[in-house]
Image 1 (cartoon, one colour):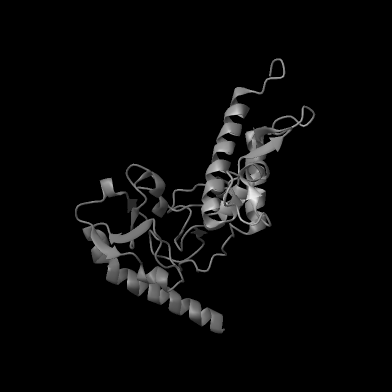
Image 2 (cartoon, rainbow, N blue to C red):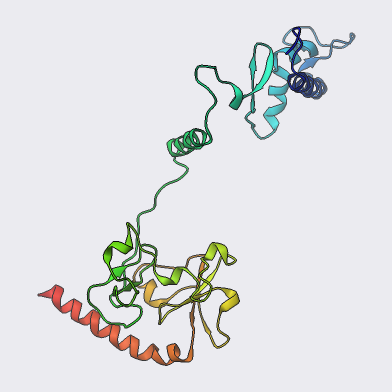
Length: 258
């Protein structure tokens, strides 16, 4: 500011705030809560607030807000000027970085409990999604699918990192994940392939929003997936796969009983 003049933005914000205060005061006056100060009819003077006092103290704005959704102002009063809260810092503190602002927001959301981590409530499959045999397998961190490392094309365990996502979470042809493919992938119940809508084979047969085998493991419908039989070969393999799975589960049951 030059020569003691207020910044233009602060002046405009002050004018807007004053205009809102006057409108609020007028609304309250119709309800009898505020004396407009025009003479003749302002009540007995007890418990009433003039429009100028209402504007100065914010009483009218607060009262009007009782019937509206509560809002949090982005501004703060600093020396009589309205300043954006994010710009209210000292030269010693310096302006917050984008990272610090985001971190502060996440901390506040966590304190309010807005985001909770949900524990996985399903089990993984007993057989590899490709060969339908048991053995040493890698478990997907996002669904019940398991695969042998060689079936998944993983040469070394170090390639897996801290988490592993199976091939059911990206299109077999274009590699897009659900969020980049319209929000939905079609996962084959009998093989590791999944397809976006653009690349879903014409011969694919719709199974539904759930895979019965996964439902038994505690994994129900999810909004980003639907299940299909992607080919004639997968349709023909259903019965054989059911027999293999039953045999593996029976063997596991006998081992647990011993």
